[in-house]
Length: 327
Image (cartoon, rainbow, N blue to C red):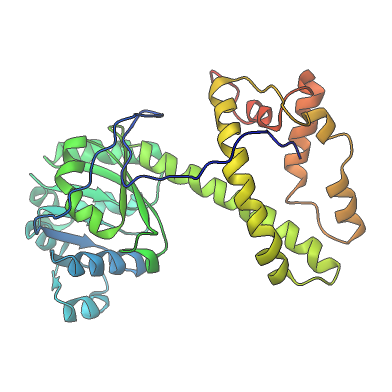
């Protein structure tokens, strides 16, 4: 494993960072200390929608909820929420509409159900449903055509973290709509505004999740190796793996990110050719009876990059096989 030498520095994630396209701007806006009470609708009160509505109620906002299964609203009603009989009724009672349902395919019909489309005029719709950048842009056009502003959001938290400092939500869409909704959004989680393109929130959401699943895949392979030798995965993870990953993330990822942006993959430690000179992980895994399915695809890319004549590069050069520069 190549180690790029650089001074470790603490990772600081501000309350809100403004992005423009794919570049972080130096400007960082202060978060309002107090927010006016707003009338907010929450459409969809599964586990996440319920957590969002509860956080809004705790912050003093007036919350109207709607769900296809009406009984799911009972707990929120006991906390002070109003239950609407239809999406149109919930929208009509609110200034800001949070949508938190399964996927984008269901959002369009929901916003057209029983006069909901007409009720949207003048409102701000914040869609917190999982989807793609293309779906976000298409829905933004549809909502704008109904006379409403549209924000797309990517929730980077599980329901239990909503309303705590550990949760943050990515937002993209018109900046004036984001600022107008800020007091409501900040009641749910730390708000991170990415830019005017509605597709930025889902794209960055999926990028973060891909990094997470990559880490999870590495953990599973590491756990399999430790368990194959009779070791305790819990102790290994707590005492060795977590401290190692935290150190590597803080030291290596920023340096690799700089190389990804610049295209200069010059190695300052062990180069890629040295790293693939011997497949120790694969060999030991096979000897221990551990499947190499999680690690093998990455190893194949590393070998291919060397075969293409880039053995003097750092590990970050593999990026050019995943997404060639300029594509």
